[in-house]
Image (cartoon, rainbow over the protein chains, first blue to last red):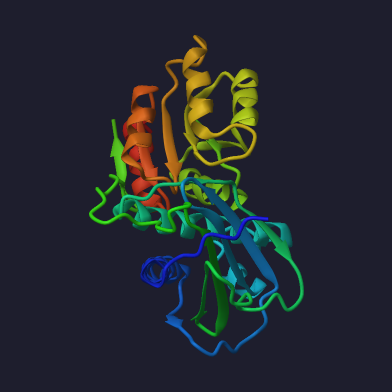
Length: 180
Length: 123
């Protein structure tokens, strides 16, 4: 079996910075103060959403939090969301976070294709995954709810996701409207 | 009579959010979960004034759906607004070339969406 390509520390630091910035940008739209935490405490996450991406670099984004967070941030004003609605909203939050991460990668000249997201429910899903090579683990609090984010990324064979002096890939930003 | 807008997105939360905004503005809403279901709805319903469509969906993505819709003489004139987390300039250009009327990068503001729909189909 071939050895996994290892991301060098400088590149890993860029991934961490871009992902942290994208998380802050995304989570502040969910309606409560956002804080990056080093020692996660709070109610155990019970919903986990996943979304994959592929290209020269490939991987998975996972976001886990409580039903309460997804219930309180559910965007529709109609009847209270069902459990299935909460899965669906968690998956959409993962999708929108992936969109923000992708835009930040594009600004550094890196593009990838994104899959359709999905979500599962369980007990004590944990705010963070075990540390492993190529995984960027973050924990935030949004109000009093804990959110875990794990971005696992496998770089190209060169080991470099970001090239020196890469041309940015043009992107519209969140909320932009273009009429043709 | 209220104009009918078909909202195609695999996220029920987004379909509801779009539906809430447009219903308050007086539009009627139909929903579909992906491009396949969207085309099926278009075949069955002939009073749809506009389509709002996501890109990343299972079964058939939004750009494939747009191309098929524009290739169908019965629906070719139907305005389509893309609503997606994707913001890449080349995808936006592709949608424009395929005949889309506009592009919004999620998340959207309700008043912005309603204004765009009004501009495209009128009240």
